[in-house]
Amino acid sequence: MNRVRLIVCSFALATSWGLSAQNDTTFVANGNPIVKYKYTADPAALVHGDKVYLYAGEDECPPPKEHYLINHWNVFSTSDLKTWTEHPIPLKATDFNWARGEAWASQVIERDGKFYWYVTVEHKAIRGKSIGVAVSDSPIGPFVDARGSALVTNDMTTQYTQISWDDIDPTVFIDDDGQAYLFWGNTQCYYAKLKKNMIELDGPIVPVSLPRFTEAPWIHKRGDWYYLSYASEFPEKICYAMSRSITGPWEYKGILNELAGNSNTNHQAIIEFKGDWYFIYHNGSINPTGGSFRRSTCIDRLYYNEDGTMKRVQMTTEGIQ
Image (tube, rainbow, N blue to C red; front, side, top):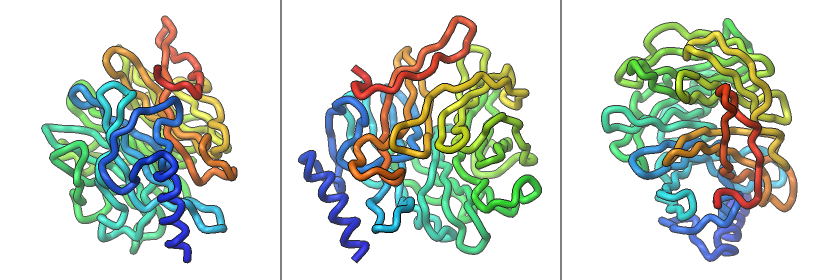
């Protein structure tokens, strides 16, 4: 019965917009959220060539008991942030045979012509959430498990917190010297260096001290400044810190994005595309029944002050014009 409800919900959303949620789909975004025929959550974005690739989990319509139901990730591409193409499903949580499911937040990065996708899933054999990595020759996939095992498991961080969901929300960044870093965490933020092969840690796991940290770290760089943004408190807003070094220390700078209406969670990606900066996030704006389990991806402009700090993001229904 629940599976029928899921199919009906996805079909109803797609049909209402005259689109198919199952096949390649090209559409023009009409304000925020940019995707209105399905629910998309925990967005991450990659600028490659002259395109932006947007990766997001898909919130499926849950049964009457409200909870997160996310079985796979989606990928969309655009060359102008207006006309988008949804590609076939590139990766499912169960494509990792050591995982039991739950396609939580993720990020894709390119290195040496290959695309590495760092994801959050639930481990079959080890209690709690884990981080896996998949690889593809194309930003739209298909992706396959790059290791055959988890990159980070909950038992690797129990000295910092006893919760089973602290190893989530991976974000990855390759610094100017070629060194790659993986950041992640819930209640406690962590980072570790990655080997050049991008599928092995290259050193210890290091805790990061950040005020009011909840989850969803994202690293980006502009000029000589590194920026670490993250979801803070609950319901979540996005805060950020700045540093001259990717390993810190980090100086807290305050709120970047306020509570995203009708969604307890807030998850961001920050990119530069064709000379402008953009803030990508989710809210609950097309969920007519309330609750935080049917989220939608939005994009608004991001601006900087002369001293390098970021201006608070103005969330809009108009989106990118």
